Amino acid sequence: MAPALAPAIANGYSAASTDGGHGIGVSASTWALLSPGNVDLHLLVDFASRSLHDMTVLGKAVTESFYGTAPQYSYWNGCSTGGRQGLMEAQRYANDYDGILATAPATNWHKFVTADIWPQVVMHELGVYPDQCEFNAITAAAIEACDPLDGVTDSIIAATGLCNFDPHTLVGQPFTCDTDGTQRTYSSAAATIALETWDGAHTGNGTRLWYGLAPGSPLNALANTNRTSNGTSYGVPFAISDEWIRLFVVKDPAFSTANLTTAAFESIFRQSVQEYASIIGTDDPDLSAFRDAGGKMITWHGLADPLIPPNGTVDYYNRVIATDPQVPDYYRMFLAPGVGHCSGGSGPYPENALGALVDWVEKGIAPEELAATSPVVNGTLAKWFYLAVEVLAARVLDRPSDKLEQGQVRKSVATLLWLFLVVRSVPSGG
Ligand SMILES: [Ca+2]
Image (cartoon, rainbow, N blue to C red; front, top):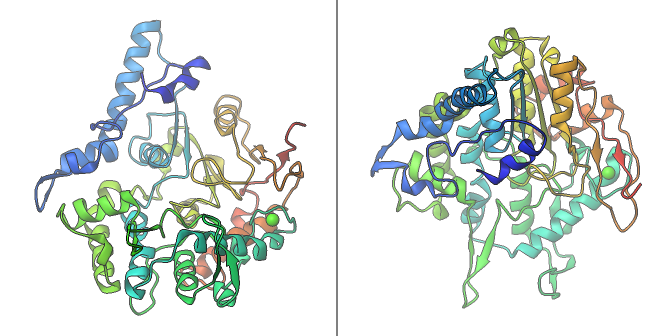
């Protein structure tokens, strides 16, 4: 039994999981290629979609066989790739589930996984690989600068869209390296890399290809670096992006993603979109079949996610809304300020989103907000706080410097006003 199933079983559910046709925790290098240049597309389809439906059919059959009656309700609960898979179920197998909780979904896979390599491209172009403690200091400075923009000073940037902090203003100033305690000086290169990580991947002429991370998110996953024993610094690409580009796009296990120029990256990004959008993009905005089947779906995404840009999820939700203004009747999206990838971070964590989904499916109670519990912040009990949804909706959207689809995003704000997460945290210990 997969350990992840334990909570569901403890709560009385009949539960199933799938390894997607491949061993869990096994590198894609063991199955991605039939031979150099030839991706095993059948195995990729297993992972992307087919195994999910197969698991569902088998799981329901086994449940009925054991209990002698078919399940009354069926739910999907997944985060990251599990979130993407939940969306795949809604998009492709609309009758499988009554309720889907698709958290921090790795949807837009063909774009974001490729674009996550962008900070490494920037570092290669600059020829500079700053130590992680400099990025940590820049993140702390960004939080200090943008935390109050949401009206509550709590070390959390909820108004990520209003955060125009430019780390170049730090250049030349001293900071203490949090890994070795040494006094150092902010560099222009680190400032540029941080800003590019927030702004997102773009072409050589400045056309943006995908979203970046929100300021205040940890930079150590995508802009990771290390040093050799003789002190030479080098980039450490995010492993999933590295594998995706190497094995599935370039189709050469020996390819190095450490030396990508902007032009080479642009070409790889385009190829990833061309070859894989329909297989694993999972970004089809037409959920009408899921709607007609009576399904309900909730997505929440942490705004301090260091791996999957939350604006990609906002982008998808906006596209869904554009296809059907009645979407809030069956699919609602929430954003969780300060929360990392699926969990973690300093923000209030919406720990019972599944309960909200069950209430929606079984009692018809549509979630107006997700209750969230806050960790202790700055040694004091977290404050209760409430952001007017109008303010939050206006502020979490893309950074004002963004050109891409800014008009479209703004236009849909009115529709989204009441959908965004209303964070009402519970004081710790209270
Ligand atoms: Ca704040």
